[in-house]
Length: 151
Image 1 (spheres, rainbow, N blue to C red):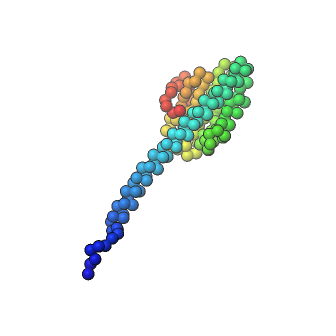
Image 2: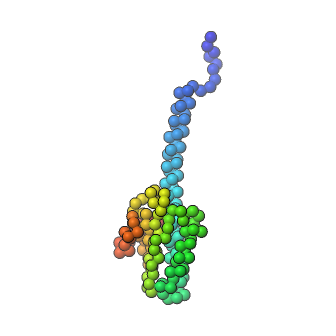
Image 3: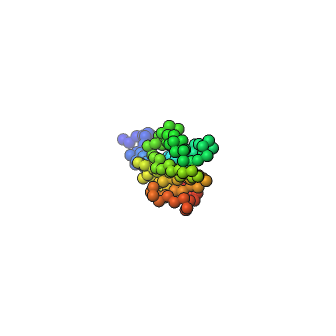
């Protein structure tokens, strides 16, 4: 005799529920990864701004940017200390300075380089605040600097 008061789930109901949960989970994970990549990129931009601030403070004291490379290098330490874990995803490429101007740049490394948009792999900033981004270290040109929302 069949008991009509069976309680529980059928195998089909269970499989449908697991499938729905898996789909929702995959959507959530990809959105989270995108958020993390964008957050690291913004933190790298903030680190560039902090390095530029150190260059400007040094210039105020010395009246030349040429003597401020050490201050910017100290600012590059921000990648290791202030921005937790950022040093594993960005590295300082160049800190160039002469008496009247400077240029700073950082580039994405490791998983960040693979995840970030190709034209945002290298971020640069100069003395007057022009922001530039590119796909490779040699691709930065301050003459074509734009604020393209990379940072």
